[in-house]
Image (cartoon, rainbow, N blue to C red; front, side, top):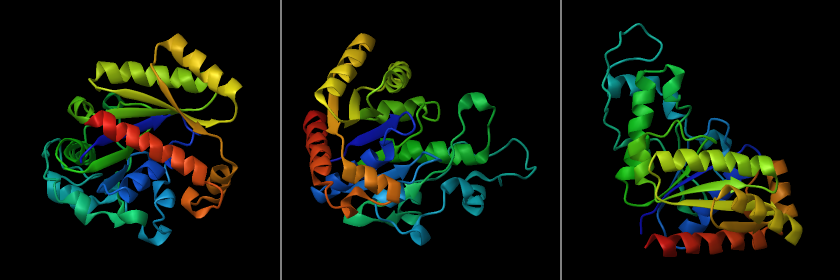
Length: 264
């Protein structure tokens, strides 16, 4: 069954760990999964247990590929003319690495926001590729995004089944989620789901619920605080490699089952 999931959130909330774990439990439960690293600051490969020497180069740095597909080479004075809809359907399979549980990983690199003044061949290729994996790939696609949605085209947003916003206890994190939610509605995303990560106590759970209700953001799925997952983050490794993270991983699996059941 195919499902398209984009995941955003304020820096430091554990977004990438949630993305990688979600991708892996989906794969373990029999779903074919493509993980897309669209966050320039992300380290999704570590959660997927892809060794550093096998991490795919960001597509944005593949200058020969960009020139081949768009007709213009980044950084050269080729003029303003290049193909806006380059061929991208073969890129996910050619430029991916296979990680743990068979999850395939591609790395996009930086997608500049429309307001940044970038109208360039690499952006044309990255946006076409992102639209392809969301609108046309018949599999589960899990995208690790930057906090904002500016790098998403409107067509891409409409193809996403659910936008997950990861928050942690604290008003700043929920404020960021509210801004992302506003953008998501403007861009036509059909479903928004908040995930509160690292929730240590009932007081924190209640605090998050109150803040989310005040912003009108809907229901929240809670993931417990885990010393083992914290240790994995500090070591730069996957939670699956650290003893004691089983409860947290099980909570992510329950969440994945909710996503699949609500998707169809």
